[in-house]
Amino acid sequence: PVFTEVSSSAEPTAAAPIVVSWQVNTSATGVASEYNIYKETNGIYGQVGVAYGTSFDDIGIQPNTIYTPPSFKNPYVGTGNYPSTVTFIQQRLAFGNTYNDPEQIKLSRTANFKNFTQSSPSQSDDSITFTMAGREVNAVKSMLDLGSLVILTTGGEWNAKGDSAGILKPTDINLKQYSYNGSGSLPPIVIDGAAIFLQSRGSIMRDLSYNYEVAGYSGNDLTIFSSHLVDKYTITDWAYQQIPQSILWAARSDGVLLGLTMVRNQQVLAWHRHEISGGFVENVTVIPDGNEDMVYLTVRRTINGLTKRYIERLTTRQISDIVDSRFMDSCLTYDGRNTGSRTMTLSGGSTWAYDEELTLTASSSYFTSLEVGNAIHLEYNGDIIRCTIQAYTSGTVVTVTPHKTVPSNLRSSATTDWSRAVDILSGLWHLEGEEVSVFGDGFVVASPNNDSYTGITVSNGSITLEKAYSVIHVGLPYISDIETLDIDTPEGESKVDLEKNISRVTLYTEDTRGVWSGGKPPTDDSVDPLEGLTEFKIRSTEDYDSPVSLRSDRMSLNIQPEWNSNGRVFLRQIDPIPMTILSINPSGKF
Image (cartoon, rainbow, N blue to C red; front, side, top):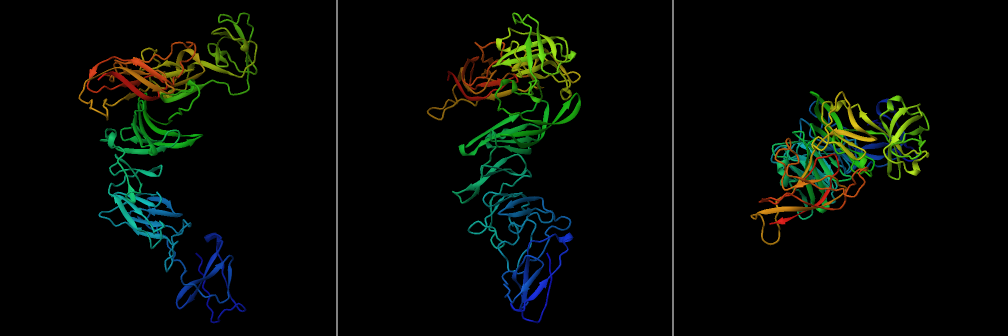
């Protein structure tokens, strides 16, 4: 602020004004756009006008003592007086919880975030200071705007309602405490108008929203029906993914990743647990990327006896081609698909059959002698010809053999729709010594939990495959499980006390492949992860040279029947391929 005082015994008039002028040290204060001018009368200063330069003509204006000079103050000076929580509310900047005064909250002047001045008498846009006086010390943990200022403290949930119109003023704060749950240190997350916060002691999640029935704020325990997921643990970090699914992701104190799918307007609430293969999740955050929100994790792993930390991202499920599916942890991808203007042309054929050597010519230098044994895949309308390189001639010419008869559209015809396929992948040092899952060109190449595939272990940062593939994903395997609850019915006689024998299950699926089902989980996954489970055989009429198509359909399977008291159905996915189950319909005797 700039304070300049001018005194005169003469009474100013329009004809003989008193000219007030001042100088400003702009290097210290900057350049102001306007200056308030005050005049003393009867010992009180009142405003007489506003100057837009560094001078003002007093023509005898009577001072308005309703508007007095504000009292300048810096609310945060000295050790122990710096705030630890902050928010914006009604165009004010709000600070709270200093070491010396953990219950106090200060709000700036309206639309002037760096100004904490006050007037005398008080004005509606003055800064505001108040302290929450409750039954115990209520250190402010978080503040947020839910239509009015909601304050989460160590001892409960408060609301500063303001005046009858809900406006916060120095004379209208109207504090009220609605509940006594208390809040943890993680910042709350707002989902569809409700605040999701971590209760004191760090394990229970609650929501808080305005309830018109009680004319105040109320909420529920979101973990009450899945308390086994948080009992004996705490939540160490969390983040909200809004698109494509509404999921609250949380890192648990033992390194497990929890997910809470929420659709509040449909009253949908579903918990799920994700154990990251060989990893300990320390942090989670969400960053918008394109048309969806991407989840990033800080994962601590022990690789080849050494502790490592990686930034890993949950991959998108919005894919149009099965070859882009990534269902493994700590995964890296080799993508040999051509994205430029270079063309490839097959020539020199007579029968164009699989046993004939052909000439493959690139439009610009591309090949080296090291390419022998790799392959170039040519595609036309979904039909792929895999051409294995047999001999090197030059940077633009190699000799190849196709894996089947070349269609007429690819004979002596240049195409940009090609990809480079390889059988050796390097740069996998982060997986050194690990047995990995491999998914190439839509085919499961290796799956450590499935004995049907040959195991592949990373050695010296690389792996060697039996065939060459053009799009390859390599990572750590994981198992996905679904188990239904005990069978019962809300209508008629309860079936809880009846024995059940489930012999068949019908699924409605979406973009699914490779499902195993049974009546109960295997006894020991380390011995046999498929014990007692039967696989849904999805392919019956497709070309075995192409990847198995994804199913969005009804699927039925006979499973191993067994009398028991629950009638549960167990589903498992052990391979690095997608599984989305829309409904589970068991049938049998009960």
